[in-house]
Length: 266
Ligand code: KIV
Ligand code: NA
Image 1 (cartoon, rainbow, N blue to C red):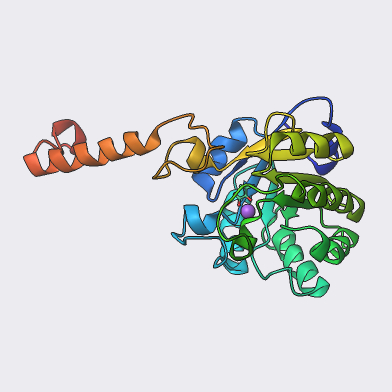
Image 2 (cartoon, helix red, strand yellow):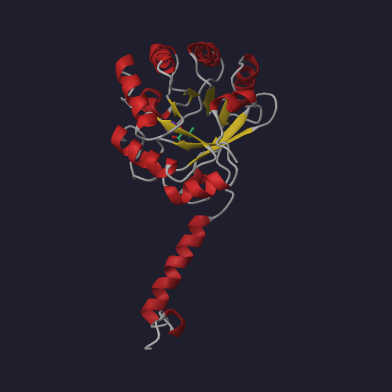
């Protein structure tokens, strides 16, 4: 199976649904890549899911690159999209192009993703001009958490209009697809039908051209209830806790290691 490409992602619009999942390291990336998922997102959710931060603001370019390399080393089928972290592209076009370039050149990603609309259009144009495919991200953009005052649904009522317009401008600026996060399904549907590039929803309803989830959420590895849009396809938290507890018990009881897990004398 040849690797998924940016032009193919665009071509799926109206033909079939796109699938995207996050991965942050090689073991999980192998499962996702072998599972026929179109795109792997090395999300800056890395900060929360793997690095233990309470939001996505603290993760650095070097940390994102480190994890992107772990994914690109093993995944040969999916298109790999790397998130540009907070403050790696907001300040200037030059910084955006340099940092996005590092994600392709050092990280070997196939594309980058950035959050926001009007305020980063020049950056997007600059990156695209440099030959770097860019995925947009509107709605609940977690790098703006301080501005929103929490992880809250975006684009209800009047505020939806601004997102519709920004989506158009992102397409014009050269984005090859667009993530819509935590917006009402009606708004996501309107945006999807008004664009020529595919939309990828997370908490944005069924009408998007594709869907994305955080792999740890999908596997039920995250603690706490999580956002409304998460569907748990497995309960790995339960499986892992039980395995750890059994191991502890068996070591404490002297049941492990038994004969079958020991080397023979000769
Ligand atoms: O970082 C991330 O995981 C994301 C997805 C939720 C879209 O940006
Ligand atoms: Na992200």
